[in-house]
Length: 340
Image 1 (cartoon, helix red, strand yellow):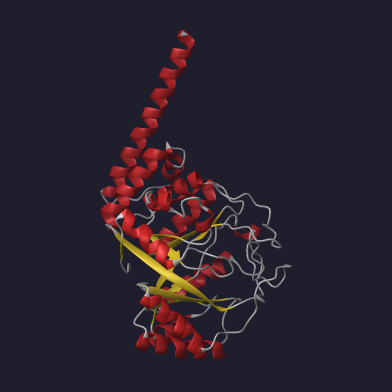
Image 2 (image 1 turned 180 degrees about the vertical axis):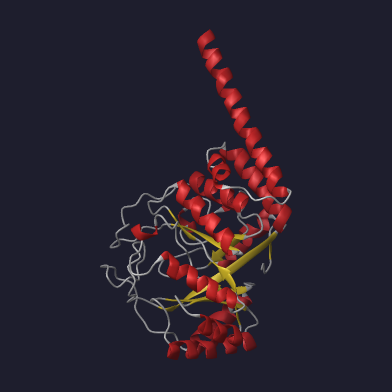
C-alpha cells in the first residue's frame, strides 16, 4: 500500500510539473513571446485538458470571438501531374475522381453568389495540377473580376506553383489571399510528394507575399508524420509570416497510397490544434478537410484554439454544410469575421 501511495505521489508531482509548465508557457505567449521547438514538444506531452484550455485562452486574447469561415469550389478537377500520396486527383493513382477543365465564369460566379448569400465571407477557387497556364489565369481573372463586382465576397486563389507576375495579375483582378499548403515538414515532405519540392512551395508563397497578397498555408495530419514534423511545419509557417493555417485531417481515399492509413482521433486533433495555437497565437487556425470524420464535427477543436474553418464540401469529399457550421459557431459564441 505504501509503495502504491508513493507511486501516486510521484505521479501527482510529475503532473503538477507538467501543468505548471503549460501555465508558464501560456504566460510567455500572452506577453508576446515566441515559443521554441523544445517548448512545443514539451507542450505536446502535456495533460490534454489543461493544454486545450490554455490554448483557447490564447485564442481569445489575440483573436477574440471572430471566426473566419470560408468555402471552396473545385474549379478544375482531376488529371493532376503531381503525385501527392493523399490526393484523389493525382493522375498516377487508380482513383475514380471526377475530371473536368477550368469551370466557366458563370459557374464560378453563381457559386460565389450562393455562398455570399449564406453569410460566408471568403470564397476560394481551387484547381488541380502543378499550376494554371497563362490562358487559364486570364480566364479565371475575368471570373474573379465578375465575382468582386457582383457577389461582394473575398476571393482566395489556389492555382499551384505560380510566379510573382501571375500573383500580381490575380491581385489586380481582386484576389486578396492565395492558398498553398506546405503539407508537412521539410524532413517528411519527400515521403509525401516527389514531383515538386518543399522549396518550390516556399518560393511560390514568397512570390505571393511579394505581390501583395496574404497567404493561407498549412498541412495534412495523419499521413505518417510525427508530432515533431507537425511542430517543424508550424515553426516554418511562423517564419514565413502566414496568417491563415488550414489543419487538414487525412481522409484516406481508396486507390491512393495512403488508403489504409489510420484515421486520427479527436483527442489527437485537439492536441495538434492546441500546440499550433501556442506557436501561432495570432493566426486563423482553420479546421479543414477531414473534419467531418470527427464525431463532434470539430467542436472540441474550436474549444482548443481553432478559430476558422472551411465549410461545405471539400475538393473530392463531402464536408459539413454552411448552415450546420453557422449553428455550431453561434452555439460556441463565435461570430463570422474576416481575419487578416
